[in-house]
Length: 409
Image (tube, rainbow, N blue to C red):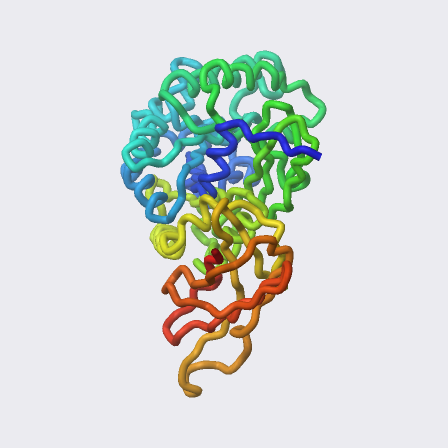
């Protein structure tokens, strides 16, 4: 069956490959995650007063975009409004529960967009569809949807071209009429090239939704391959994940992913053609914490060795064994090799396998060369019909790239 051609915006999105999710708002002052108001049953009038001390004194849109760029991320998705109803943008009179009416006294979305454009990063915006702050969400849903849709129109008309809008919350009222036709129509009218995403939540990974949706989501779960055959529209996929166990900053959360784990998840996403949207939770003052910043930069150094394999290559019919897999472009194939051994003296290196022959099937092209991308070392290989075997040399002592990539031509 035929595979539909992706819309240009979807094709661009897939080539971005890797993005930064930012969960930040009033909840950062309490340091107990983004759901703290709801889970800890903090009275809303008490919670809303946090905006009187929400100064955002360390929030620097250019610096955040620079961290994303150094990390190899090509887009940022910021929580312009989360479930607590507080907006980081100027709602233009729709509500006083926004950043310009806080101690910050400024439009923080505008600052991030300016920083993103200076660093060549595509700005995208998370926006809640549920709202704990607005009474109409509970007692006059049609009026609430008017408020929500007007809010989205503000985002679509106040900041120039944006890369996409990422919605979250329809799962809170699964039987309600969310008037998605109207919502997405507003976006298509003002931002026809913006990606539209609506998170299906933890319980419905990869579920397709409204026809205007451009990408499905896999929240906190590795994505499955998308079946595009015979579909009316080519839809992308994106996995979103936290670096620790909270989306908003958790002051007592010490359980963070390592750079090696991040590299593993990024590779797993790209294996099936999905993007990887990795979250950071800035401090109350708006700064990305030191560990997150350092870990992301380290992953960026790994990506910088072979960006074409991460951004440009597509899923391949070529099959590896174990965790190994292949991606390809029009003129070459990239083999992603896992679990390589490390060389060195017996006094400093543990014994074990990992180097040696690695086999791949369904290789239809004739292979003329094979080399590691990180050091240009030529690799021995043998090919018979559709079977390719390469001699995967181990890491020299002092090197461990977690996943090593070979270029096959």
